[in-house]
Length: 449
Image 1 (cartoon, rainbow, N blue to C red):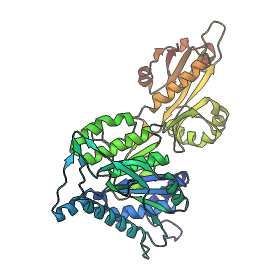
Image 2 (cartoon, rainbow, N blue to C red):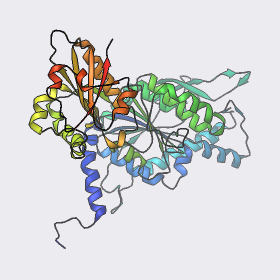
Image 3 (cartoon, one colour):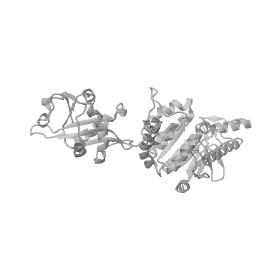
């Protein structure tokens, strides 16, 4: 075999993935990510791979704050000491007798993570890595207090986050490591919810991402299918669903909702048990879990000349099937101002064009919507409707009174969008003159308010 050729399909897949990950590598550089994982994740056999992936993110210039939990480790320490701590509303009541077990668990996990991030063995993913990990009194806590008549004693909540100190550490290319503990101004130690530490830290830093590594890949819909994207207000029913069945997941969801509504534009829910979940979520278009965002993840906008290549990739397969009329690159470049597109991470997922039709004196002002196309992987979404409604609004702003669609395959879909069947004779005279009787396209019309 020629030594200059890839040896197998696995190599080709790797090359393909690496090339397509480049835009994400550039987009994530110098961004701040808060990554939270609980004590069960630390115990899982995949945790060493997670550490390797975290080291890779650090090497790519991503600013990282890691937040770890310690529930199972605390439970084991308490069992070994013959101590029992009650729970109330799914929160531990931390007694003074149990505080030593809590501090021991949190401290041992911190040392374990620092040791793993210090590995530099040859022939390992950590070889050549130089990672400085810092922690300390970066979280100020206060007592959780008395709730429902129950004194939570040394269980606390976050009072403040020392963002200035964290930023200095991040500016020095350090990884910041936080645990489920905070300190009061009087020198007391409080047992905190790691999920709250991660959420409050992400909000205080206005982090670019908050990532929860949990038991499952993300959230499923009623059909058992993974929901790739959700808005924060959609989380309420899932929080209720998991509140008793899996309190840890419910805590992740509450944190995701709070952070998303307070300025953290993207929150991710992924699995700690799935090898490569972190990389897949961050460096592929669809990711591996569920993303929570209160921002517009995909932008509907008018196209520009840089979009021509993406339009050609989207339109050519449909043109070859005879669904759309062929448009040359030159024609697309000349008509690019007519097109609207939906873009996601640099890829064109949908497009449509608006062509005003010259009107005679006795005719309504009209326009034709053409070239409605959606990427095959997204045709079960509402992106077609989204871009159609966008152009309808554009037409109204131009004083257009009626829209026409000419189609050979998808008339039923346009009827669902409020169009009605029409005849060729109802087209404006200027458009009738250009009608292609060989294609025999169906005509649909929609009157605009």
